[in-house]
Image (cartoon, rainbow, N blue to C red; front, top):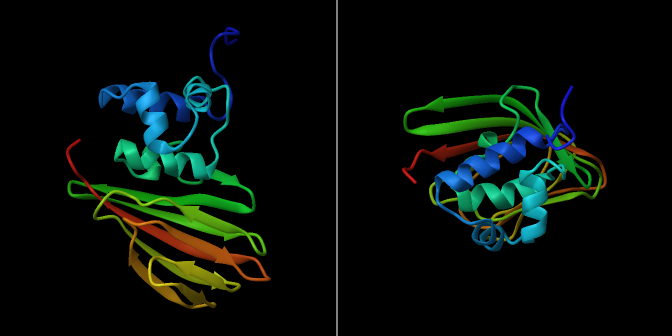
Length: 181
């Protein structure tokens, strides 16, 4: 049985990974919170497992840590994270010496939007639409999406996915080059 002071929620492992990465990079709690654009208290609660992470928060923290989203999630295929009408299910992660490739099944409820901050330089995303319609914005205005469409873009600038009036389901592939931090 876990002691009362030990984090046991779904976010405990994620929080421990964030703390370990932050400390390995010599970042203070205040510095990482400021760089991620979240409150210091929120980051502290996340690291201690007292708060479950949202997809938006995980992306915000992953970028200043210089790691792919997969480095923060439960390290197994099938791990699910979601918030406000957006659910990402990890399908596969391939770690190679020069890059990490993450594959997610992305589901957006009708009208839901997933706004992502810029990832580190060199990160590329691809989206293959399975069902539904919507838009992706990655710098040059909205690009319409329909079943079968494929979009590939540099993800080192803010970008967003938005579902149309029906739910949008797509395969999202994120390729992050390995850099020394």
